[in-house]
Picture (tube, rainbow, N blue to C red):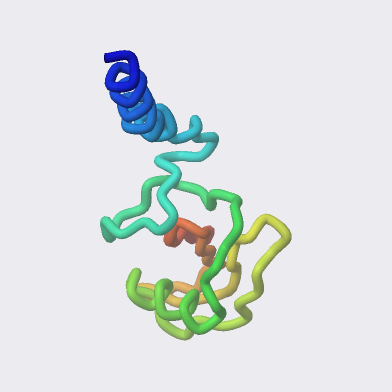
Length: 106
């Protein structure tokens, strides 16, 4: 009887332990998505963070947002790709953050 109780108690402990590790840490960024996949920005300004987009991927994401003639792309010290692009006949500075948010300043 004592061995059975001990075995059941050990099994219950092992099964319950992983459930305590399921809570993610609090976020310090808007929506904290690794990549914004909704097709819409979740922030009206670039969000700093570790950016894994290559220059080619950054250019493609900016073009997917409706821009053309994307040039001068460089990643800044905050992990944000910045460059120049055209949209609707106007040229502007553009940015792409690690979440995929594309923003322009005219």
